[in-house]
Length: 183
Image (tube, rainbow, N blue to C red; front, side, top):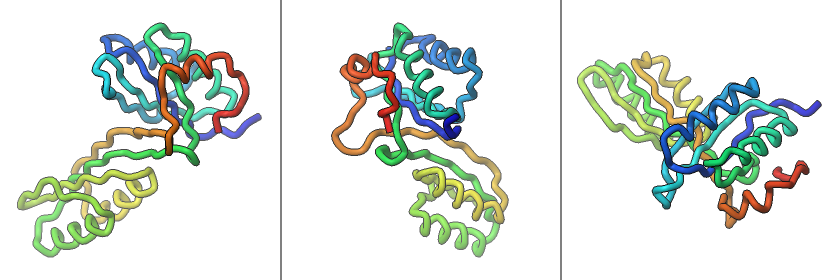
C-alpha cells in the first residue's frame, strides 16, 4: 500500500453556479476530506481554476483525478507533484500589540518573514504573508506569544514550474493514462 500524503490537484472548470458543489461532492462521496480549497477565475472569465489538497495515497489520488475528469463541467485535471510545483498560501494574522514596544517587536518579526503590515490600530497589528506551509506555520507559531486575535487563510494555490501548464490538451493527453507518471 502506498504512503498517504497531501496531494495537490489543479482543476479547470466552467465558471458557473453549482460547479464547485459538484466537485466537492465527488470527494465527499469517495470518503475524502478536502484539506485545502482555493478557487478563482483564470485569464478566461468563463473558466475557474480550483486547487484542491487532499490526503490520499498515489493510487487513490489518480482515481480521484480520473473521476474528476468525468464531470461534465471539468475541462482539465492535473496532479501537481511537490517537487515540480510552486505552492503558496495567503495568511492574515491580527495580533494584539497594545504598546509601542510590542508593536515594534511584531513589526520586526513581520520584516524577517517579508510579511506586510496591512492595518495598524492602537491595540493591534494585522499582518499579511504569502508563503508555503512551513513559512506560514512558522510566523503563526512565533506570533502566538503576542496573542493572535484573528487568523484567516486562503488555502493553497499551486502551479507547475517551468513551461508545463494545465490546459484542455492535458485532459485529452492524460484521460486514459492509468500509469503513475504524474510525479
